[in-house]
Length: 113
Image (cartoon, rainbow, N blue to C red; front, side, top):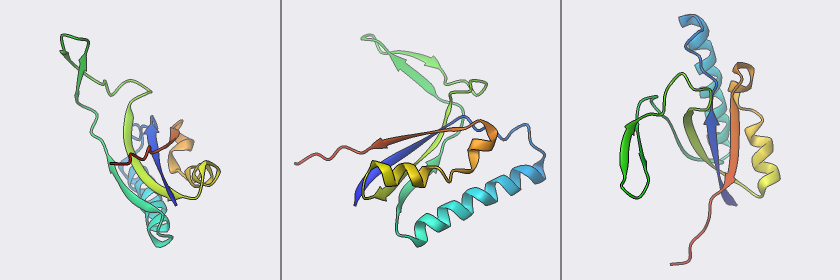
């Protein structure tokens, strides 16, 4: 099995009622449980919207990313899959597509050290 990272972009639930937010999060917990039961879930975390951006050779620090952006990374998973095709099929079960969310699927590079 190889490691793949799912990077979750968008999919903002803040406009939903508290009940709808809770129901949507339940779908996430069900998906994580399924991946765990299949021994495919390696790790993952949700990210808070605030942060800092560090850029350029002078390492300039600015506020960001900004929560109003539709391209804010909301979290990530690292999963185990036999290949990219299987990882993509796994990512298709993400609950955020109904909210306009996007999942970027990336292979994790191995380093021989």
